Image (cartoon, rainbow, N blue to C red):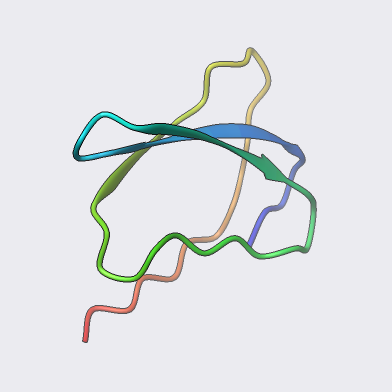
Length: 55
């Protein structure tokens, strides 16, 4: 759940990148069981609470 607004970049295992626009209070969900790396290319802090379902 985003606590700040901004854009994060999700990089999939195959190198595909997707820009994810975050809005305060609006959740974001990646593809189920997809491994991805999340990065911030901006200069402002982005804060969020992550909930990960493992099974």
